[in-house]
Length: 341
Image (cartoon, rainbow, N blue to C red):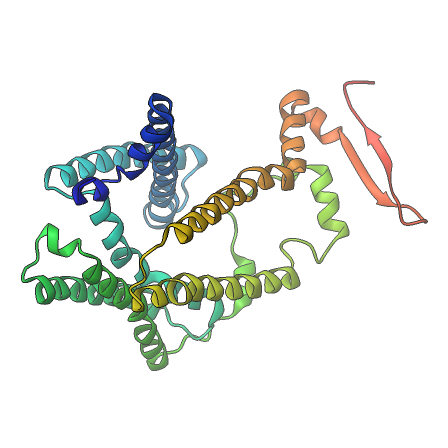
């Protein structure tokens, strides 16, 4: 395989064809189609939500109704669909391939890491800092990226800016430069944010009381330390912070830097172990990301099913409460199913 074919992401289809023939090619095509459509779907939803809620409802029409927001959400879907298709076509015709995109992507996406983390972990971060520091970080990363390409390879072309070292230097600068930016800007004018203000925030549209499943409402009333409570939120903030640090140290420091510094070349045995770990990781990801949400949210799925089957009026009367008995076992104490009497 040539370097161009590798950079274009053709390793997987070539390997699949070699191992499984036409079946491997068909499977690769199906996987690629599902990955692209899933990713684009998530991006379309994100962009349309930003346009409809964060732009239109926040700055243009603060009294927007459900219909207005949904209409602008549809506008966002159409806009981003056209934009993404046009932008992808542009990148193809100017010679930008998959490898170039993946290498330089960190320069654009990493500036928000530390300002976002400080938004929920540091009360003294100012509004100016959280807005300006990512922009300064991105500018720093772009300057280092293009400057490194010019210094190391003699020019700033698609080929030179797609090399590994300029992208690594630009991504590191883009990631870490917002850290001093946001600290310095915040120290000049600290905000001293009150975390209790988060309790004043409301959903985009308040759900009526009768729209909440009776089982879920009963659990919230009986378990004040459950999801949404202050102790529960503090616990998960700590867990998120620890896992973020561990993920960063593992992915950025402990794993790649020693291999890069030693100029390590994979042996056959090491590559086999690499593949085994990768396959185990993929299966674990499938179980955690695909099946666990269904298991964890089975009560919500049940509530939706009852609403669809019995209707709103009967759903209000279809109540199943479970309380602890005297011996510690959980026994049903009330079951009313309207419509079946």
